[in-house]
Amino acid sequence: MIMTQTDRDVENGRDREKEQRGVKRPIVPATVPEPAQEQIQANFLVVIHPGSRSLRIGRATDTLPVCVPHVIARRHRQLGQPRREDPSLLRHGLSAADSSEQRQSGLKMIDQVIWSRKMSNGVRRTPVSAEQARLYNRQIRPAVLEPHSKVSWTNTTHQPQYLVGEEALHVNPSDCYSLHWPVCRGHLNLHSGPGGSLTSVLIDLENIWAHTLQKQLEIPLKDLKYYRCILLIPDIYNRQHVKEVVNMLLVKMGFSAVVVHQESVCATFGSGLSSACVVDVGDQKTSVCCVEDGVSHRSSRLCLAYGGSDVTRCFFWLMQRAGFPYRECQLSNKLDCVLLHQLKESFCHLDQDISGLQDHEFRTRFPESPVLLYQLRLGDEKLQAPMALFYPAAFGIVGQKMTSLLHRSQGDSEDPHDEHFLLNTQSKQDQSSRATADRRAFPKPGGGEGESSMGDPLEKGSLAQDLELSQAQAEGLVPGAEAEESSALVSRSSAISQFEGKALGMDKAILHSIDSCGSDETKRKMYSCVLVVGGGLMFPGAQEFLQQRILNKMPPSFRCLVENVEVITRPKDTDARVTAWKGGSVLACLDTTQELWIHQREWQRFGVRMLRERAAFVW
Image (cartoon, rainbow, N blue to C red; front, top):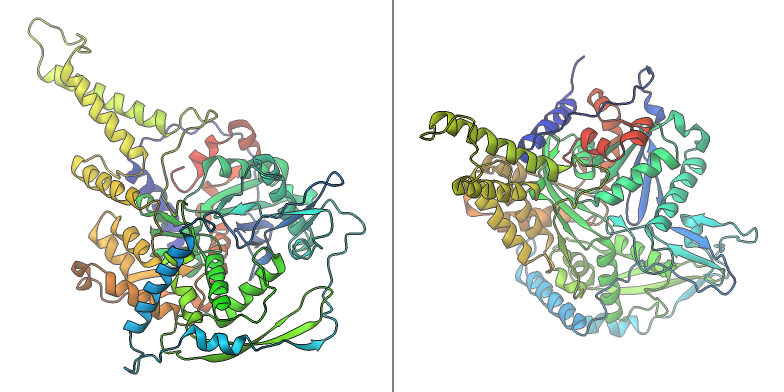
């Protein structure tokens, strides 16, 4: 069998992860024998990439996945039940007393950067004030293009129990339905309100995915026993949530087998790269990590709690300041939120050469309303909004944790041989081996070789040091066992924890992620290739803008080592939003993936232990 480069990356990645952790793996439990199978057919492999805003799902043989809004409208069980709608653009931390002040401070920093830079022809930008645009926009009145929009509310006369995707978004607010987004910022959307329990969210996920499989992919649920599934998860994941979703796929939905892999690694597979610093800018989160030869470096993973929806909300505020002519627009209205997303994608950019006031137009098409045409004049608002990704104070989010790391596992009662057990066992075994060697080399006077040394205070101190180091290893901070490396990495972790509650700009997050890599050679590789995926940074000029930011802030010691900082925003000239999904379809067809499958019967017998044994990354 000939192994491709990607095959080698997967194989090497698993070995490198084990070496980095310095942990002995337990013996694999006796697996349930599976019946002999023929070679897996790619059209019987389903790749699922669940996002906060969109679900991408399709067969591994499909050119592009099916993309549907990751939302469900569920009918009220009782008359008079209060209606709940999970927010799309609104979030916690926006109504704090100093939120507006922080937003203004962030916008002031953005303005200073804009005016400090010259355009590519060396000319200074033309000063534009929001007042100029506001005087024009306040005079605008919409023109009626059509008396009827031909857009209607979803028909609910047959009273379906739930509606999915576009149908859910177009449910009339007067109907007895509540709207739920089951994924929020990369995790299950658990909250204290109705529909916010783990059980409810999992049922929502199952209904959305099952409906899409049947209606979009035309796969009957009774035939899922013939299908296998590739599930893409975030780099910083909640182990309990992943376990429950895998259980849903194998036990409740009935897939025959599942492979779980990380979004960043799949993004490198989808773009044909062996190593890269992967920046995934989603709708509600931005994750950064360094991937080398098919393995995501554990200590390099960062998750920023902002994304494309925050840029949309910032753009709305800026347009309001400039006299936005559609004055009825509300962030609490789901259809208005869809319109604002479209305006952001149409108008916003990161091109420093676009200057001055420009005229635009847009149309509104809402159910039971005429089609209206609006004129809109904007200046630097189109550049300021996406720049907030680099100056997130402009989002005005106060009192929320904005930067996250992958923390130590809290353990699982179903997995007795988890990393806690392994690390403690390894430490005791190593201590016992050293004690035995010392007794043989330096026998005590009057004592035999088998005498106990449990009372030796030096040995107790050494054991305490080993356990302390093991704890650092469990945190994913120590790739090896050398004290010099551990102290440096632990000190870096302390430094990062100081700004966990602060908003970290995207460019600074990239530099911190690369700086966490163990060797200068790895850092050089990461600086040489920055891969941007996801739909949150798809603005004209984004590639050059991010490249310039990294070059300006790169440590001087690496400027002579790195020949060229390459920022890739359209890998293989494809849509960056589907790069990770395409990588999942590539992974599904690799020969080395056969070792990663978790079969239904194995899961029913061993449960979460199979994730630890079969995952291509350290669970």
